[in-house]
Length: 387
Image 1 (cartoon, one colour):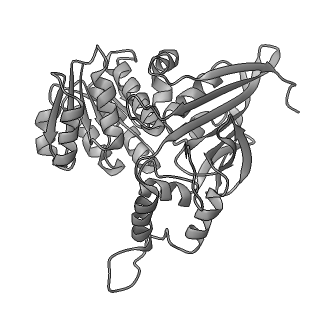
Image 2 (image 1 turned 45 degrees about the vertical axis):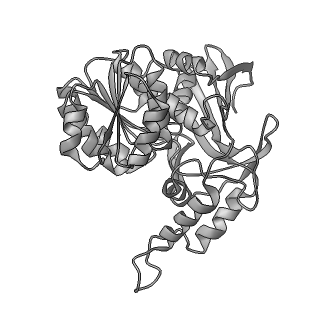
Image 3 (image 1 turned 180 degrees about the horizontal axis):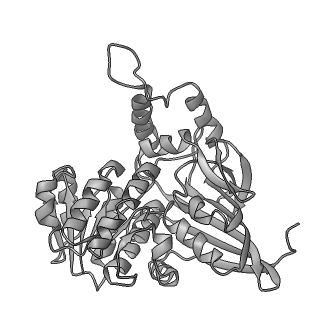
């Protein structure tokens, strides 16, 4: 199969790396506008499989000839390019995947399902970690039950060595981080969709050492379409982001003071408070560091006449051998696995648009991740029926 990756930043380069290791992938085309990044890709991924192209994601004319003869395109650039790149991919007869995280863009992509179905191709948003891997894992667990009372999701990335006052290091886009901390999260309570404010619902939770006691709080961007899909199927769907204690309150101070506002500082500059904050976050919290991704999902429901609790837990660490952070591994390996399953024809052939949890064969997905070192532990226990 031939796959084109658009954008070779931290995640795109990790996706390209993983794709080149797959024997069923014959060609990986990498598109990136920064020549220095392309040089690094060429040095890191030598061999006949990889082809690099210096091209901007906005240059549809140049991309058109590159995407031609591709089986699938993966977008690793800003979400707003998604609809244009999806249309270009479908026009060239290629499936399209993107990392996700922007709810409005995900809805736009899903609305393109008829056009994709006319070409028997798939448009699949939300293929990263959250939304993405976490959604697939949650839906996999729910499908084991005849009736589901609750699905409780806790997950996030943390540095191995936290430093106050934020106890956090930037693993992805600063803009995405602030968006998650300033937009409401959608959950299900008593069977109904509910919107809650970000950086609220603070709780303490524990993970195995060396992580110990952590905090969870509400944040947007984790679940995307999952609450709408599960409305009427679960009584409670609750998801919180995991960080070290103190992080949520530190961010609430910044947000409360208006530093995340998208308004100009004054009439003499076009810079907004948010522009300044994102630059400082990149400067102070970015860089290379050892990290971990922590995920725990607990689902309670009925199987036949018995009530049970299913717990999934995953702890992924920085990989010294490949020099890939846990966040890059989890996001990139999930995306490349989804992409190769689609390109290999392991999904329905009529095409359309759907998030991966509706489309992907879930056992094959997690078997593939386990071969890449991302292991999900599973635990079942009997419980009393809910009151």
